[in-house]
Image 1 (cartoon, one colour):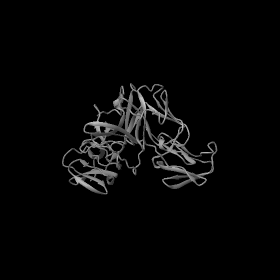
Image 2 (cartoon, rainbow, N blue to C red):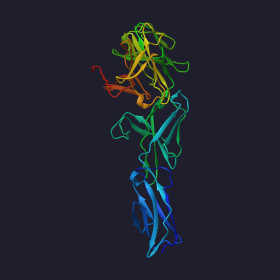
Image 3 (cartoon, rainbow, N blue to C red):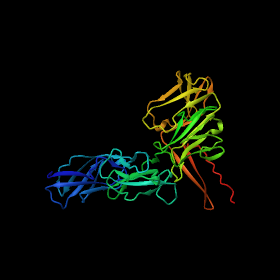
Image 4 (cartoon, helix red, strand yellow):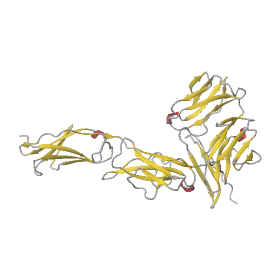
Length: 403
């Protein structure tokens, strides 16, 4: 005997459910009373209980499917409910954006966090990255540990630093939480807030020929007071625009005749410990260089690589282009364009023209910035900035002998 209508509901009623969350299916018998019913829940096979709620905790992707239910009371059966579709996604991911990413003192900076493909029921937590330390909450790859910002738990998708100051520069992550019991997304990928000071290079490229002029400028919207140019080469860290390697005019340091020993990492530094972007410059004594972007390329943008001859700077000879040692393009114009840059385009690039190879340059869509402070007997000897590291790079730090 079939009687009484049956309703089936999914709690929580979110459009997107992720692996690890808790889901409750509820079977309601319309007009059938609340007692003595046995509730059968169907997907592939069935689950039977006197409780009208079927709780799945935690839920997995294998739970994806169409569910129905019906009630049985003695020799009576309710009508089978309409189907409820449960779709379980593998993993939620928080995504953080920062605006602006290059700030000047006093600016208001907004951190925005969202969960892709889902916008319902989340609370957001905000963190600043710190060097990895065992025992602290950390990213999965242990690249950073994280410390919560004050008032970090909120239903708002944004968090404002106002006014932002020197101590706010650095990395940030977010993650989201919802449900009972609580379910956490993974931490977002780190995003970085940089000081408004930038290092400008002219000519604007990472590779340069020897015996040419090269200018480097610490630029803070026309006011670079208190900032100095730094460089790290094979001979160590040098501060200021030293007369033995450059001449200073205002905030611009000019190397009038480059040499191979000018190759190294350059950045701007303030007395209060702020840093600009760092630029890895290669000075080549060869006859071919690869012109590539000084700064990281935004994913989705296009980028053009140019193969340039020392003695033919205004022509575009035929050239072969290589990524990580593998030939990827033959170009008659001497230039290669990547129309839409993605993470997979990161790597070491070089070109070959007239059987002459350029040095390699690292092209990246993500900017890696590491600040290392060296301590010995409580004395800080030097701060070193290393940029655009690859996984195969080795960093050797040498401390002076104790006095």
